[in-house]
Each structure stands twice: as structure tokens, then as C-alpha cells.
Length: 448
Image (tube, rainbow, N blue to C red; front, side):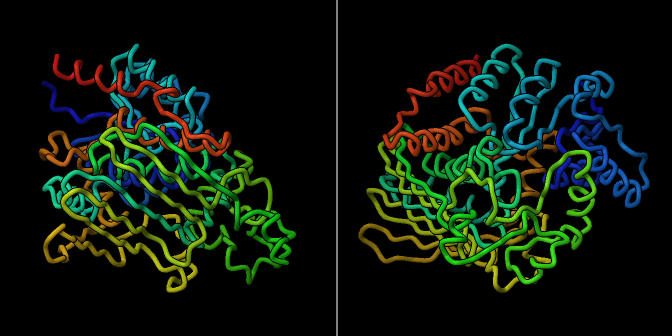
């Protein structure tokens, strides 16, 4: 067996790619090699190369424009392609990388609609290549402790999941400044953002959803809502707009090196505006959502997502036949942040506060110590990168590594929720995609 480092290429070099570029170039440089970058924008790729050269003294990485993806694979011969493009393009690079002989790691969500989901599964069937989905929240110490307690049986058989996620007026608003605001790009927040949350529920209760009903609205952001409140915003974007100086939702792309280098300086190439007015047009996604679902194990889910909360984090309670467990996570409180912190493009760091309380059915309630971690997303990112890039990561009884089956189980809730919002009717996931058949096929393949 060869001991040479595994070779990686990255397609899509926006801000999120930095997590992988930084890790591969530093922490994992002895066991993994980053061999190429691919993007619509040469400016973005050059920005990363300048940083790597200045900090590490290394030669610039080979760069390829998006239409040169096949040439990148031929010339750099990666073992794995990491896909960090906008969501609606994930399937194109996943399927093409597999056709060219590469395994794939993709950012969540795996994809945004049924047609693209089927294309990914067809590529896996045709090529036998592997796909990992980077659900980093599985690795956050607080969330893994929650999983351990459920596996230990503190609630018995889960019967009801009550889950609320609050996105604040910094992070939540940012989805309405960026490409995510158009559902054709992101699938809406029930696909792009809630894929994290649905995956956590699937993982925590070790089941998968069968039927979904959803309601949603654009209630806060957008031109019509601003006008209904008597607010007027004539500017289409924020940077360079004097009238936006005192707008609490404004984002100035000149205020941070990464925002300027990756987005403002790349506008001529891409046409992409990173700082659009959250009260402008077009916005085709919802900012207020409620979902109910029934799971294969009989559990019911009640889920809410709001994108304009004063604080960011979650509240979840799972009640079973032996008790109840509750958790509250506060990630950020917007009004306590400086302007620079509130508009940071970097991954969120350690959680501000985490609390878990267990209520046995016929016993005294008690608090559980919540482990903490350093690094992005409550300490999750470094642990996930270890799992992705170390040649022999530690055994993981929690099953945190997420496959294409996990990616599909999560995104199908959002896809079904979007359809339910359109039709006003419950949606049965088996009518959309036979995930159970695919799951059983993978089990047979793994045991063969």
C-alpha cells in the first residue's frame, strides 16, 4: 500500500473553501496534498494563492477556471474533489468528478432538488465512487454529547422532537444579501440551512422521515415587508452607498480583507454582488418556516426556523417513553457583537452558552455537563477535518461521518417541505424518492 499523501482538488473558492484550503495546506500537509483550485473567478483563486505564498512560502497552486474542470482533473490527478460551489451546482461537479475517477467530499446541502439528487445517485451507481457530506455540526462536542445521552437511553424510545432554530439579524440576514436569497440557487433555507438541523434529528434519533408538512412565508425581509412597516430603502446594495451608513443590516465589503478579496474584487469576473439589500428584490426564499414530520420509528417532529432573531442558536426537547431531554445552545447574541464580528465571513467559533437537562419519567431532573471545543461551529470544524483528512481517524461509535444516504435523508425533508408549501398538502417522501431501497442496497454492498 502506498504511503504517499492523498491528493485533493477544490472547486468553488469562496469563503467556505478557506476551511479546507487552510487545513490541507497546514495541519494535514504531511498526509494530504492540495493539488489544484477551480473557480469561476481567477481573482478568488489568486487571493488564496497569495495568502498561502505569504504565510507558508509555498509555490502557488495550479488554478483552473470553471470550464477547465476536466483539464484540472487530468493534469493534477486528484484522488478526491472537494465541492464548495453554490448549492445548485453541487451535482454537476459531484457527478463529473466521479465520472473522471474521483471520490468526492461536498459541502452541505448535498443538492437542492429531486432531479439533481437522482443524478448524484445515478453517478454513484455507475462509478462506485464515494461521497461524503460535511455535516460539521455532528462533530460539535455539545451535539455529540446529546447523541450519547440518547444512545444511552435517557428518554427511552423517542416519541416527539420539538426543535426551534433561531438565525439572528447578522447571520440570518446574510442569507438575504447573498445568492441564497433566490430559491433556484439554494433551495431556500429549508434546504440550505435546515439540512444541518434535519440531519441532526435523523442522527440523534437514529431514524429517517417518512412524511412532511410545511408552512412558510417571507415575513420580515424583502421590499414589500419594509414598505409595510413604512421603511424605504432605495439602494440595491450596501458597499459605497452613503445612505446605508446607519443601516444596521448594511455590509461594507471594503471592511474585511476576505470580503474584499473574494467578492468585491471579483465582481467584474462573476457579476455576483455579495452585499445586496435585504429589503430589495428579488427574494424568493422564506424567512419564517414551520415543519412537521413523521419518522419511520414513529417519532413526530415539530420544527421552526426564523431568520431575524435577536440571538442565534437552538432549543430542542426530545420526549420518549422513559423521559425527556432538553438542550439550549446560544451561539451568538447580535447586539453584543462589534460590527466587524457581526459581519465576519469566518466560521463561527465556540458556542457562547450550552445547557443540557434530563428529566427521567419518575425521577429527579438533573443537568448534564456539556463538553466544549475550540474552533469553528462550537469546536466541530477541527474534529470534522481530522475525520476527513487523517489516513486512519479514530474509531467513532457515534457514526458522525455522513454518507450520501445521510445527505439525501436530510435534504429530502427540505425538498418535501418546499413541495408541501407549494401544494398545501402533506408530502410522503417515498413518493419522491425511494431512499429506503437505496439504504438497503448500500447495506448489502457494505456487507458483501
